Length: 212
Image 1 (cartoon, one colour):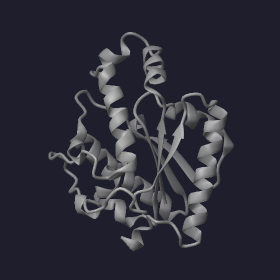
Image 2 (cartoon, rainbow, N blue to C red):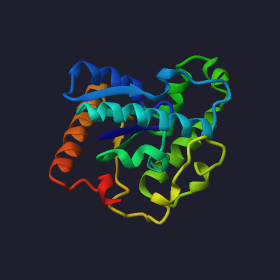
Image 3 (cartoon, helix red, strand yellow):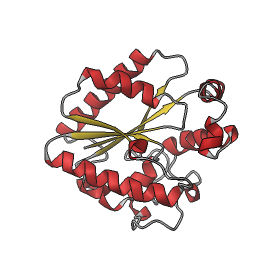
Image 4 (cartoon, helix red, strand yellow):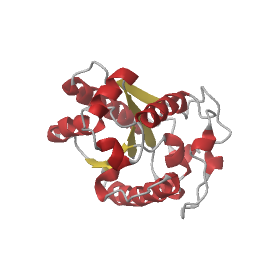
């Protein structure tokens, strides 16, 4: 199955993964979306194409009985619309988030040239974080932000375009890292993974692709 760990920059994803990896969770491959590199001018269509590439890699893991935990900026709606998403046994998503004030401090601590290299502004990252919060609870919230053209992958938005807030399939776990020690963040991620696996084993996972 696929575990999607999403969140805007500054949420603490990399710190959490660095804490999670030494715990050696069984049958779990951990990757960061950006580890294969991000080209200058990377945009939403580029992310759509990279989503599909990661999904294909994850299917290789699935064939070996291993789950993929993929951490990055990809919203659940994008993953569900990617061509190969329907080939997974199940998909689980978790939003890592923090307060705007804490996010701003964390991003500024990356150095004065970090924003220049990324080509964004502080407000851009705060706005993206706010959109992700809304997206995590309501699939109808401004879908035009991610439903753009230009990707090579044939996106299948109709898989979830009729879903409304409260639909059991649109279930995104949330971890607030504002004041939580990284050790406890990793604890919560392990608990989330174990719970999602148990739901799948019991046939109770709401995003088993066989039920789409």
